[in-house]
Image 1: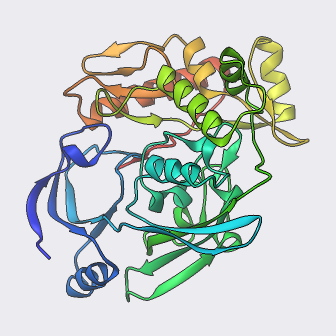
Image 2: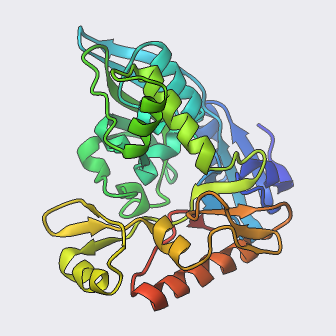
Length: 337
């Protein structure tokens, strides 16, 4: 397996940021992964998946290991459910479309989310009323230190809103190599609870949608709001939607009565970060080659030659303005490197 030096990562991050890796290797098998970890025990390591949830603000002075493990298969099934295992390097959207083509239900609302399967548990990705934790069974991961394989159950992953054990207690200790999902074969739980999906289905006179029709609606909505990273560099939603205690929220809402929100528990509400950013006047703003997308204020974009530092500066300006205006702190969902 070849280790390349001074390797450009421009085509390995969806922001399209030019940054170099001091060393780079792409692994295509578990044996490859074990080998490169064993042979480079003292090298600092950076694990790279689909490059869709990160902002590179500097060159990477480390051995970048690109996880390119491929393959997907049914490992168990009964009349109602199927257990599907996907290798970490599979493209997420292509995997979702494959499950729908088999009439396996559960992932359709997460169509067109960028990135690879292996990174989905790290963030507990989600969209339109569903999250990875809803169908996740387990994942296999390799310890970076001694190359042992361990299986993490759903409970062990400690999923939260865009959170997991891989972002906290065991951060930088494991590399996820495959993920198992439990999907429906019949009596699919179609989730059209988000108004955008219902509206799109109604536009097409669909009252009892199939998995494919829900997926198509989600794809249409996402394409109308989110730029294709191949055409305009971006990492999807840059910020998390802030979660506030209802007592705190009521005080803010008294000052801003038109503020949008969603109840998520008896004591907490979620405020759409995109709404806050739009109200603060950032939607469509451009600062050189860095900016905020014209259709979706949650998305920061690279118009061509922006540096990671320039995009980071825009994000910090937004955070400071939102805090000054609303007294709400919004966190980056994207990992800043």
